[in-house]
Image 1 (cartoon, protein in one colour):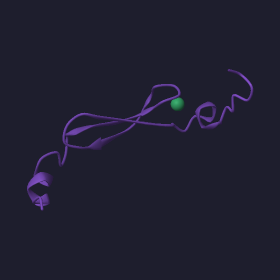
Image 2 (cartoon, rainbow, N blue to C red; image 1 turned 135 degrees about the vertical axis):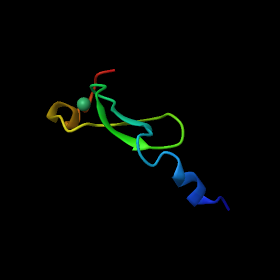
Image 3 (cartoon, protein in one colour; image 1 turned 90 degrees about the vertical axis):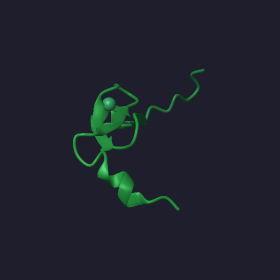
Image 4 (cartoon, rainbow, N blue to C red; image 1 turned 60 degrees about the horizontal axis):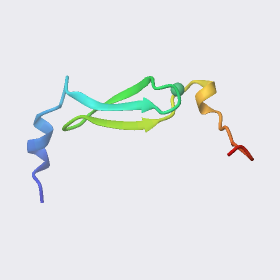
Length: 59
Ligand SMILES: [Zn+2]
């Protein structure tokens, strides 16, 4: 088992290296305090990004 308390000491504040990016428009949604740079893709609050675009028949 890892000693979690030792890991929490670093990156407690000011170490927000994890980024949640909108996969639709590419804007930064939020940051997460993680160990190491991490990019997570999600969808932001924009209506245009929230909407699903079912590409029915196109392709
Ligand atoms: Zn977006």
